[in-house]
Length: 131
Image (tube, rainbow, N blue to C red; front, side, top):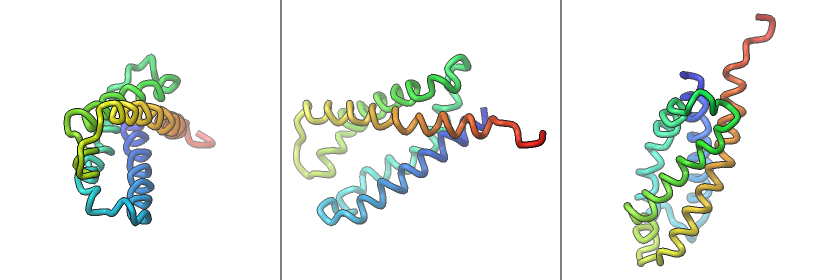
């Protein structure tokens, strides 16, 4: 179970670092506008690690990407429709259809990232060579 937590947290941390780099290097986005997003990002490694620990045993490791997509759906709905982060970042209202499209893209993105969680989880569960 600890390996699943480590795998989820590690991939989430790398994803945050890459996304933060994109925000910093894109002058149009401006880091100050992304302040609400960074608050959510701070929780991401913990949430991903705990979510990985909650994965049903029968789903490990084959269905981890699907499990991650479920997390992406929950996170996307929360961020887009409850917190309405898009409007906070852009400074103007965002239509519900665009927020819904963003949720679908996030689900696909999470699915891909959780493929990496699956690979990492397999690597952490592999016995050391010569053991």
